[in-house]
Image (cartoon, rainbow, N blue to C red):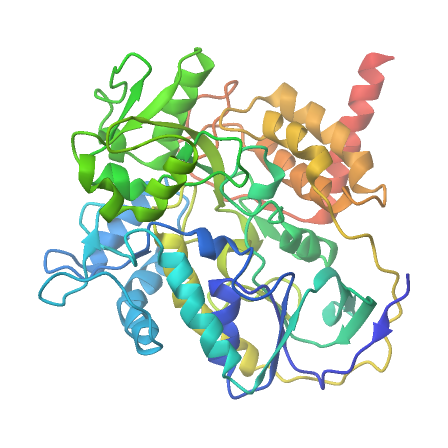
Length: 513
């Protein structure tokens, strides 16, 4: 289907309406900007589901240096220290800006911000709202601010299908809406499309968050970074509901413990115990499940009857699953939660393609390294959105094309590849399974079907995982359990990925003949 042209006057286009996209659009004001989102604003964004909060060194016993040290430790050698320092120094002031928009965060009796504790943090520094509904509160405030900002044009019900590139730079966006396919001429695009959890059977993300921004960037020729690092949250509520309700890390921060079906606390000998880094806890829970045991989060001693008041939404989700967390342990299992990798960007969010920026989870800024520190995701989106907006605003609109000849692909659907992605790209990986996944995914990725873009993203992650022959952070290889002495970032483009995939497919076919 050929796209119809829709003139937007060369305005920048922001794709995605989570915290990163909304804040970028707001920071661009009063410059005109077009904001595209798949669903009505404030719905079906991973930001809405963010429970823990925003990490910021606001306590009297805390400092940006301590936040920096904790972030670097969690990142397992792959953080960009300059970017980490920039974010942790900026986020305390950025929170003041969020409050000025009307955000209501939890406070102590004397009016100070109530700070929570989460895994791998050495201090209480998590700013939260309604106990564990921080993402929902941020979206409420930001959506309202966007609605009243006249310079922001919001187009809802839009699926972006491709970025159009000419002479090495962005010249337009092709998107599907209810009445057909539309092309928007622009030389400035910001990807704020979220993560990849929708590729997995067990996920806390919206099922539509399968990495479409990565597919858009890859097909536009952008360089991608550290795609192999997918974080699995250790404590998703074990239920048939998808996305899986998250049992926030803050529950463990209040003293809840992980036990097997016999009540044995299996993390007692692990440094940090339940508050060790997420990759450590997720692998420990996974090992219990692989051994045939069930895993529970037991908050009866630390919270008991106070659970409902401290964590009302989690209590409601548990009740819906037939569990009373005040008197029963909560059944949990790991679920795909956050992608540390993404579009490789510089300090201003610029990608390797002229006119293309990325912000939030779809970007790889170097903040998270191999394993994100809890509650640094919202901090990153809030802090970096202003830098991205300043960079976009400082870039001229340029001459606009009068036509954008293109044929639009189908709307993507990841459902048919979830089982394959889950088996190959899960908590523990191995070379044989990764190679098999690559050879299986390649023909799907180039097949022109609805699963093509999801298959492409899964294949890119599998290739990055195969290339990293070590275990570091969230990337665990059973055939390479050791950690290399020197940490090295990984980089990938669509061209090199296809070369690798074709070579593996040829070797596989030669071996079977």
